[in-house]
Image (cartoon, rainbow, N blue to C red; front, side, top):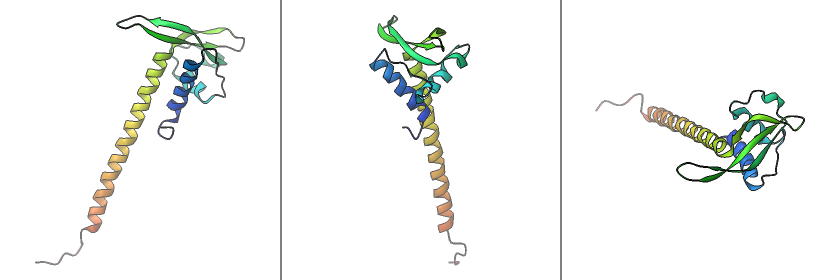
Length: 132
């Protein structure tokens, strides 16, 4: 998976860290930091963000009640940079990107295979066939 879509894998790994330990914070050196920051919706000034942490669990009330994690961006002074983001939405975006990437690579490999098969068939076809 890392070879196919390393960006999304790094982002998903960062989200897994938050799911395992809500007190964890990731810094710009973490491979998932830029991935999450780049996809963070409506974040006014991404250059201000110096770390990403998570808040307590929230309940997503709808057809089913589901616990979720709030992702929080912090500036250099530890102030919250609005808006906050839901871990489930971040995960959904990354998984969709990963699926599209895998599909595109698979499609490319499929068409390369067809071209190779076609060229191979042409090379096996004798140029000077004897008349029968």
